[in-house]
Image (cartoon, rainbow, N blue to C red; front, side):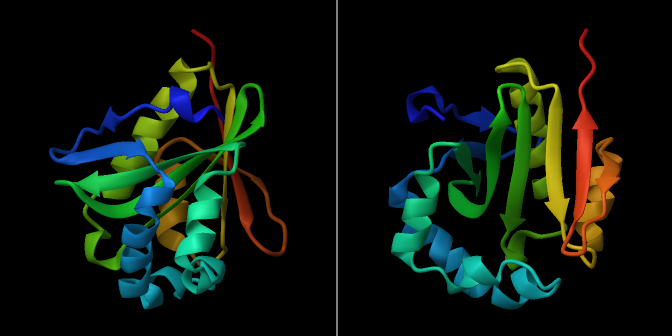
Length: 166
C-alpha cells in the first residue's frame, strides 16, 4: 500500500490515536513487545514477533501489501494494527496490544477505527481476521464487531465481516 496515503486517525477513546507505522517506530515497538512477552504468547501466538529483531520489525513495516498503524496512547506506542490488502476491496486485520494496555478498550477502538477507514477508503466489502483457537479475547472482540466465523483450519479460526453497500 502506498505509504504516502497513510493517515493518522483518532479513535473514540480520548488520547488513543492510530498513526502510520514507520521503520523509525521499530525500537519502540520492540520495547513494548519485550515487556509483553508472556501476554503475547499466552495463546500460542506471536512467537515470531517476540523473536523479531528491530531490523525484522522495521522490514515488516515496509511490506507494500500492508498498511501498518501504531496505536498510541498519549503519545506512547501501545500496540500495532495492520490492514492487509488481499484484493481491491478485501482486507485482513492483524493486531496486538502490549500487556500494560490490555483490557482497556484500546484494541476494540483501534479495530473499529481501521474498519471504518477501510470501508470509507477504498470501499472494503470484506474484512478478515485469523485468530488462534485459544485466543478467546480476540474471538469475543470479532463477534462483538459483527464478524462471523467463516473457516476453522487446524491452526486458527478465520472470521469475516461482510460489509453491506449503502
